[in-house]
Length: 111
Image 1 (spheres, rainbow, N blue to C red):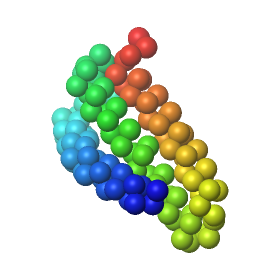
Image 2: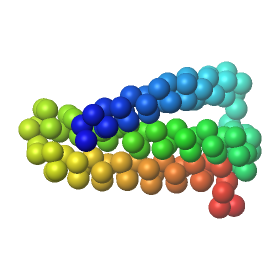
Image 3: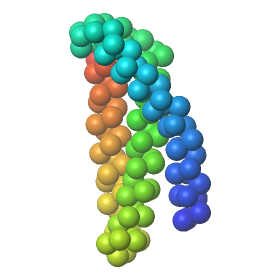
């Protein structure tokens, strides 16, 4: 189990690296361009590319972060593996839910 989590965390890190750089580039473009929130939303609403980009980003974060937090809970706080796993799972589900909610809002999927 530990080896699989290690590999999964490294794989999600490899996926997240270009996504983080892309996200930062979008932020710089928007800020330098003086775009307002409504102008940004007008460009992202219904755009399958942006929905896919940020959807993948959210999925990677929802897998990557809880694995790291599980390790911290085990190593630093001496929490048992099953308890740490339960906390990590709850965190992952929370991140997934909040992140997908943001993707839906920015992508205009409910409009």
